Image (cartoon, rainbow, N blue to C red; front, side):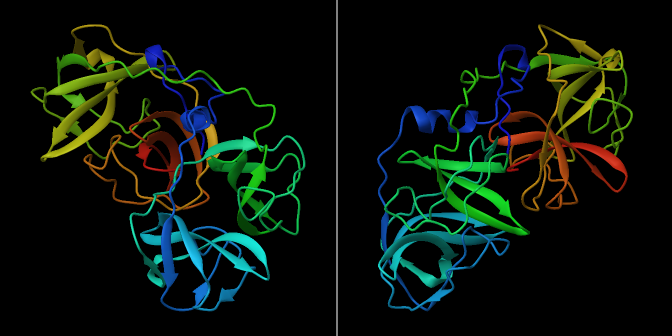
Length: 327
C-alpha cells in the first residue's frame, strides 16, 4: 500500500511510500503483549488470511503461546501468536476463535507501505535473529508490502512463487530516504452552486455518473479542484438522501468563497491486496459504494485522508474514483 503524503496545496510527494511508518520509526513504543492460551488445536498461517502459506502446520492445544496482536481480514479476526516448535521460536497467525486472551489485545496495522527490496535478504519468523529463519531468502527487486517495524526488522508481505508470505526482514528499507512528514490538510472552501450540479465519481467525463444531477439548492463544501485536459473539476461534499458523499463537478458550476486547494493529478500505481468495500468519502460515515473491489485490481492512488486512500480503478469497463479504507 502506498502512502501518499498530503502537503500544502494537496500535491503529493511521489516518493511517499513509507510515510505511514515514519512515526513508528522515529518514536518506537514499548510493546505489551497479551497472555493467552489455546482452546483447541492451532492451525497456523504466515499471515492473517487463507491466502498465506501454512508451512508450520497445526500445533497441539497444549502449545504455550503469547498473543502479540490481532488484525481483521475480510471480517475474520486473526491473532499473531508467538510460540516454540522444536526448540525454535516463531510467530505465526491463527484464527482468534482458537485463542483465550487474558487482557487487552494490541491491534495490528492493516495499512501497508509499498517498497522494492534493494538487496537479497534472509527472512525470519519474528523480529530478531533469535527467531527461526525461513528456508528461502527474498531476492532483490521483490515488491514488499511493509506493515510494521520492531527491533530493526520489518514485517512484510511478498509473493514467493504463487503463494503469499508474511515474514520479518532485517533492514528491508536499507537505502531508502523517507519524505518529510505530511502537513495537515487545508480546510474545505465555502461554496455554492450557480446552476444544477451534474456529478461524476472522478474529475473527467470518463468517470461514472451514478449520482446524477442535483438541484442548484444543494448545500456543498468545495474540498479541492484539479484540471483534466484543460477543464477544472471541483471535488465537492454534499448530502443526498441523508447520506454524505463526495463527487466531482465542473468548476463552472461552483461559486467559491475563498482559496481552493489544488488536488494531486498524478496517481501512484498499486495492486489491491485484499477485496474491500469502498466509500464515497474518507470515512465509514460516508455512503458505501454498491460493489466491493476485488483483490488484484489495479489502482492509481492519489491521496490519503483519515486513513482512507483516494484511488482510481476500472470496474465493468467504467472508471471510478473512490475511497478505500485499506489497500
